[in-house]
Image (cartoon, rainbow over all chains, first blue to last red; front, side):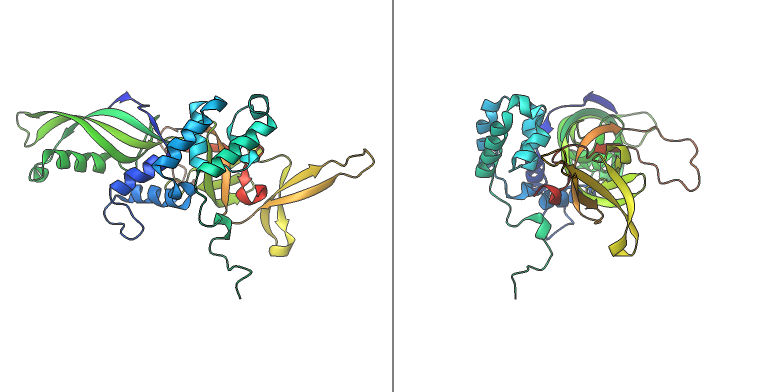
Length: 133
Length: 205
């Protein structure tokens, strides 16, 4: 085996998920894809990537352009979709100097506005709701 | 987190696959060869993304199968240093945490990369099982005020934890393994929690 180009482009989690779906991975039938692919599929479905669409991702790409972020940072934002300033702060290096506190909050608002929210917060999954009687 | 890697591979196509079309047969063989395996310095191979070129088909003298040179792209899991990733807590002990992403389990957070100051102590409410505690000091406005500390525990197995990739290592295969050591891991990710926004997601809600 010869490695010709170790880095022939990075993929967002969303792209990987749609690739695996096009290969036939779905929650119901596991048999059509290899076990390794299915495990990755499960991880991606569990994370918030599930509700993204092609439009929302390219919309987000266009809107974050003005912040002059590194490619890796944009990739990370698309993968994690941080909707709070602290989430942005974690991803963007030297956030205070480059964006400032307001910039981080603005960016978080943009992410929240563009990406459709997950149906329910993950932390409450599986737990009985306190309000349900 | 996921990357494409272009590789070239020479493979011998076993005759029992010759009833399939060449594309399918080659893909079948590549998948058997690479899927769910770690290639040193490339990452964990998840899937064969596409096949670019199939050359050759030469049958070597005395061999009962054609040999092809294939150029294909693999979908590999290879996080970059500094990337922020969510994973689930798998286990923890006095040396730190171990996280799992479902398809990849060798993510370690050593204790010196936990948020400072952290300690490992028995949990009195929970039958004295050990747990990790991050003690966050809130300084009072006046100097006379006592500093109050908020305690954040890490003790729930399966909890989603956000970490930053500190390094990705590919240890070489040991010649001899001690009997009671943990199984050899060909790819190890070291993560850090020592920054704002990292740690269990519940801390930052």
